[in-house]
Length: 454
Image (cartoon, rainbow, N blue to C red; front, side):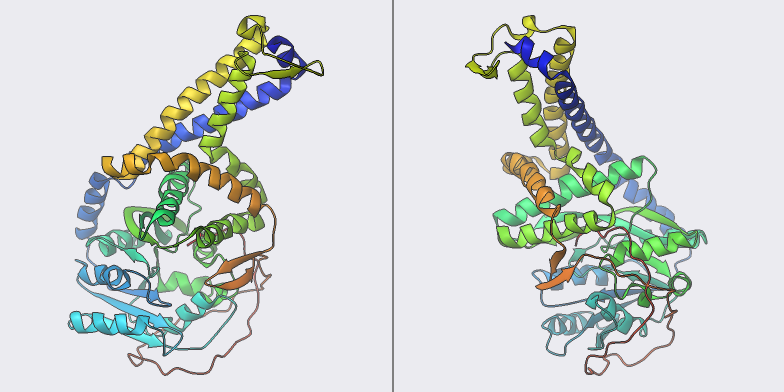
């Protein structure tokens, strides 16, 4: 009977009810925070306030590797900024990189812009992106710097908004969230849901509780003084989570991290299940390596599996499903009437969390979709997306390596000593000469926390 089913394992049923309720409360929080951060009205206010300030010249560093889909269109958005004075620095490590042709096309399309192309094969550590940044930094002419990934697109007020908080001497790094756009077919759509309906909402929830422990490769704005203070890009040369650590090192010096209200767009291009799996498990495994407790708690954010668990638990306690009792097969009988007061309360909690979770998950999907057409198109993918996240989380609990741009990289973070200063000033040639790879030794420092997985 279902009454004996509850009385045999009361703590197990209460634990299930508590976890289901926690998952539902998280889904509700994620849905409620969506319109409160990065809204169009909030961005308009931030842009107006930013333009009221005296604009400070800024150098934008864009490390490139390969000709990604929509690379020209994404880079061109940086050439359409309202900011009165800025420099664009694009860097590659090989003279044969196809991204060079894209930059040349930009230079031809925007002849009045200050666009610098750096070609330098020097290697300074295990993180090749940071090596690229070290090579590019010598070409930055301005005291404000922005590091931005290659696959993002921005609005015309972007530079004004992300540089404005740096007028406060207590601010170290300004970063911003991003919205995913799928480029391709089915699997890029699944990947976009990873960002729009899991990663970004989790950041918003954390931000709403007062957390400022952020640092996203989509945008990292800081002053040259702050960069020199943390040891320059050299301090990050052996770190997998370079974007987070850049902001973390600034916070270690008492400088705040600001999450700007502007959202940028990023492309999800993984064409098949394997490439998507590798990218997303890389993100989760990196979290596990640096923050085991945070990784262990992620399971509560995978809503759909908890809805299924809550619904099954309710059905069992209500006698709607067959159960095994007393060592012999039997049908559920008696239902809720056979339960004690504790059983009835647990059943009510499971029912409430399931219904509330369904409503909250649909609301989160609606507020993340950006339109009714996308809402209905991707609604059937929500169960798959949440279930895939659970499976990836389980897979990420094991293994010691990740795949990054086809390279197998250990997730163990290197120990480093005191960082070496690497501030640069002055201007060199527009295109530097490609040299043979050179690896420079430097002290090491502990790398903690995690990147945004991009």
